[in-house]
Image: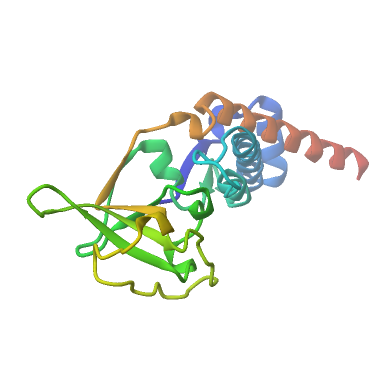
Amino acid sequence: MNAAFEVSVNDNATQRIRDAVDLVGAAKAADAAGAGAANVVRRHFIQLNRERHNPIGGASSNYYGDAAAKTFSSGVPGLATVTVAQTGIRLHYEGGTVTAAPGKALALPVNPAAYGHSPLEFANLKLIVFKKQGGAPGAAVLAAQGGTAVGVGDHTRLKKGARIGQATNLAQLTTMYLLVDHTDHVADPTVLPTDAEIQAGATRGLANWANDVFARKAAA
């Protein structure tokens, strides 16, 4: 899920900005407000990328850095829109439940080598299903045979292992993913700047734009 939010241009317009709008049009003002707001969002993501590290260790996936690169703005007269085209950012912000498709499972990385990677990127994963008392299926994991995950690149189909639950030597397996049917996510409003910070960015964008408009007029 992407995230998008709107900024009112009129609410941030001083008389100088309104005068600039009279000179070059409201659409240009909306573009300036959107650009100012988007810059605030990008800087926020870049800071998060420095502060929020891989929770299970290992290399960072650069998630928030990618979010900064995927933050865009657009405008129509009176209104600017900022869009963050990063998968999952809205889920981080609003929270919610992600449910696997029928007959499928969600793979949660539990090993640093798996973080930021799909199970399809490994060639030697085996499905292990632990049994509860009475024989009912319990927890399920994807484990690397031989203790080391072997990467095969993107878009390679996961090879099927032996029969479920038939691992002969668990000591030679390294758990890479936990398989679950759903995940619950708590809302985190700190993923985005506050409304006041975004509005302030839009105001700065408008003020800088107006100064540029009058500077170019004076130089003409």
